[in-house]
Length: 503
Ligand code: FAD
Ligand code: 2HG
Ligand code: ZN
Image (tube, rainbow, N blue to C red):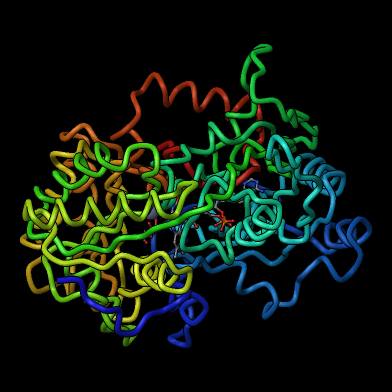
């Protein structure tokens, strides 16, 4: 039976409310994780004066209240102790700041929209926050090739709106789109909801301008689809999370805006059937398939309960969201409807709803995109973002439920099953070191045994840096250290992040 939609959300819920919740500030990262400060310089008033001479008084924040939000991450797991936030408007300003900081051995934490989920975007000690939000100009959009050239502080959603005015879309989309920056996306190699269709940023990013730790501006801002002239240096900055340079401009290839978008939201009996449905969707929908997401019962129920919204269909063990992007509404919705009919007959789909009106589509996506914030209403959420071979995709969820028992308020799994990337969220009433040490390195060991990756799309940042060896061979880690040494010999760029601590 096809159910009618009861009540929908149109935007991910809980995004702004959660950011600076009134429950008080999180514990300092240095105390929570027992960290030692590296021997960097400390910011003095002469340094502040220098920064003001470049940026003016307004773009150098030193007031404690003004600086505080830049010290706390979105999840409220990490809190730094920075005393200065700098807000450059041009690449030249970034270059002057870094050149000065490098000479004085002042550590710097580049920050975009501060939506990162691995503590990479906030300082650990008193690193200077280099906030890129004022570098937010769109420089050009080629009407024929779809190449967008812009500064790194542009908000993803704004870029997407701009692209849409010219019949293009951004090649990536994520729940944090209203806050995250394209520079942050590139620096984390963000994946998101449509990677299945449009690929990852290594493919869409055509060019980059970045500033090295010593202030050198690296101009790799090409706009060509094909360019095999030597090393592909731009890729060094994709996913390096602000440890190798500060991204200041990007050239991105934007796909054509689909003329027809259709979305199906289905109830499914078992995870095995989710996988069967994935295979069937690939076969039946072929070139128009643009997203294939799953969420388990607890993920959806926690979201509907905590945000007081209704699930458009009844209760099922698993939910699947299938989207198509195509060029002919009649053809695409016919294909999806036929798929639904066939799969209801086969028993893989137990119930479902299909939408092609923008409001209804946004509402269903709103429910999906609100899942990451939902658990935060119930306590402290441990988040794991792992890639696993599809046959093992859901395996850790029941395993972790059994391990934590009633010490966890809820454990759920959801994510980008089409890309083999599951998000496991475990909510506990409050953070304890005991539970933390039961989860880590246990989860990473399990992922490694199953030949997965301990970070599929969120990065390594601060929280996962001591576990990167579960997914990287020593030879690769050694090369990472050599690259870091080459590009940032004083280690001023985002210290305590990505590379494991040297004991
Ligand atoms: P920040 O959080 O500010 O920074 C992230 C890292 O990049 C830090 O290490 C920082 O130092 C570095 N950095 C930022 N800007 C620059 C720059 N210009 N130059 C150099 N380094 C820089 N991620 C996904 O991959 N897929 C998802 O589907 C997804 N969904 C999300 C949903 C929600 C609700 C939330 C809160 C987060 C989600 N994320 C997702 C995580 C996050 O949004 C992404 O990692 C995003 O790319 C971070 O962008 P940002 O601008 O907020 O970067
Ligand atoms: C998503 O896919 C994000 O919604 C966030 O990557 C995942 O918060 C999470 O666990
Ligand atoms: Zn995700």
